[in-house]
Image 1: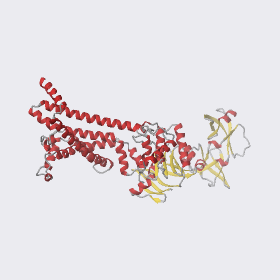
Image 2: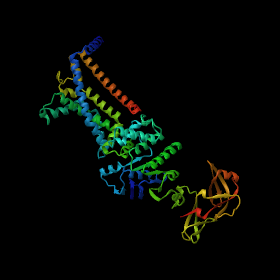
Image 3: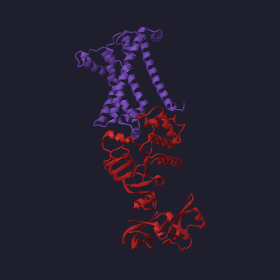
Image 4: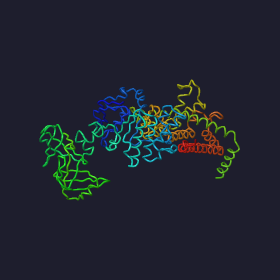
Length: 356
Length: 241
């Protein structure tokens, strides 16, 4: 559906996008995640043909997008984009949603029918007569979604559709996006800085940091097997233990940390500088040194306990900092207190090793 | 003081008793000013768009010159039009000197900078996101320009109204190229200046009132039009069927 090759883009001297290669299949939901300022919006603007890249190629449905205004318009008519802070026309909600259809010369009953349907889908039935500029942020975003969706684009580009919204509106928009995806065979390319949102919506993800796509893959892959320290940091791997591979026995490595050894699975060679990444939820805590199958067990002192929702985030000083995420209930059952010494353990398979 | 009061009474009488002279002058004034405003709007709103939506060298300078021309003296424009259309001038062969046509041409030139400049200002008041939104929803270049123009419609209408105000109230140009020919090119402003010179203060005053009343009516109408449009936006698409 969409292919991008060696895309570069600069504003003046600032290089915003570097060597982007990307492919999105028809019907796929592809989410680019990355921190604010990583180039997500620029990438979407280039793909939405709002701007021309400094260099590189974009293929839409197998055709190379060239510089002809006519071809660009033809392609633009097959896609729709919703921006982070959508602008509404100084007109009614109805006229806003109808815009894309009107410029495609649709009118009369079919236009009205489509617009009303779209408004119903986004839960804004009855709003058609309202002045679009008087809507709240969430409502505006829904109008923007309806406006994009009503033209039934083959490719829908969503630029951080929930970045400026409260949690309730955010979950509403997410639900809508999921519904739209389910209902139609639209291809969706979305950007977000919220990695969990990406995880919830994406079939495939690309991590965009500093203008480069550092990794693509399905959400599970990105979250549990980040390829670099930057990605690991961004996707919330809190425990990143720096060390050296001390031995490698048929893929089982010992990573020597400062005063401790972590066992992990890796094919990296002895002597390599690495990070042992352990997601906080992979760590189990116990009062006694149990005989579990977990290869890595450390004794540490609790330095901090933070409760949020049903979870408890426990920080341990094991000679190095280790963060564990357990349920609030088990924290209570074990009667965990700051200053207590407990055992933290995780499996060798729970450690993801990346090059340092 | 008495003279003014008397003139005032006479003026009101003239207006309400339907003095044919007063009415014919008024009708001609409206005809000429409205023609020049309509032609001016058709020419200079698009020109404003053209300048605003294109980037070229000297754009800022051009806008600066246009703004300077807001206060172009009417007699100066009159002089230029005179030079061009007088018998010896380059367009003298048309022989339209001292006709309502040449007055319209002169007024179009006069209001050109104002309509163009204020259209540019009106368009700059619209967020660039509007045009991008239109484009991202599949608008062609022209359609996207139209979307922005629609967004700026109230400000653009104001630009046209200001142009009309200048056209209807100027006297220098009408006098120089129109010639103040009775029953042909005499308009409110030139009539006022002539009648005052003749000492016909009452007639002048009556014509003056009419001029102000016309301006008021046009303003009120335009404002109502704007309000109706605003209300339209709010109500037109309310579920009626």
